[in-house]
Image 1: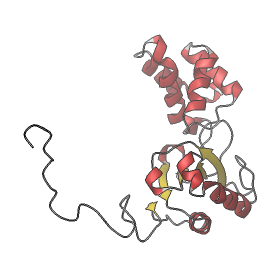
Image 2 (image 1 turned 135 degrees about the horizontal axis):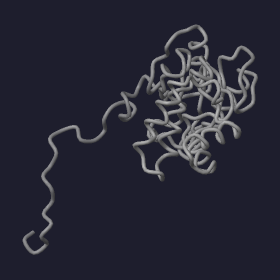
Image 3 (image 1 turned 30 degrees about the vertical axis):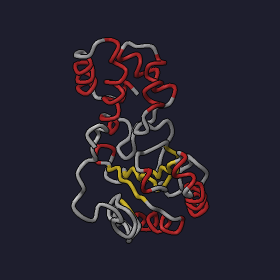
Length: 215
């Protein structure tokens, strides 16, 4: 991999990490390698395989375990090939209770792959991700869209999903469309309550008296 990095890029990486203290180099360089991924794979993000992680560690002069920690913690780094549209299903409790396992099962069956496999046409892969912070709109998936290259990718949430709607989103991407992001529930606006507000419909009342002796 190092031989394939342009000399100028390698010099830029070494220059950028020079501004970081030794204890922070692992995180800075993981990002550098992600940004420089077109040198290694013009269409998809660079793979953090065990061999490549050791090469990263050599450049930044840190133990390989430090690079491994970063590469395995952040979902933006892939340790195996992913599709141009990488679908990540939330697997945390709120989404699971609301049906994320059924959504994942529907996606895998529709695409004919197992988790972390890529479809034969290279378009899609399905993985799992822990809490994405949209529990109020569970269940949800995120789609990492690499169709414009590793540096031009987008990362969007699709919330309030059903298995049927998840498949419709996949087919929209297949047609080259950009499905509406956010909630897929027509009765909800953003993360507001379904059907509209049921409280705070008028002027809020003043705070209650907190001095019991004065009340």
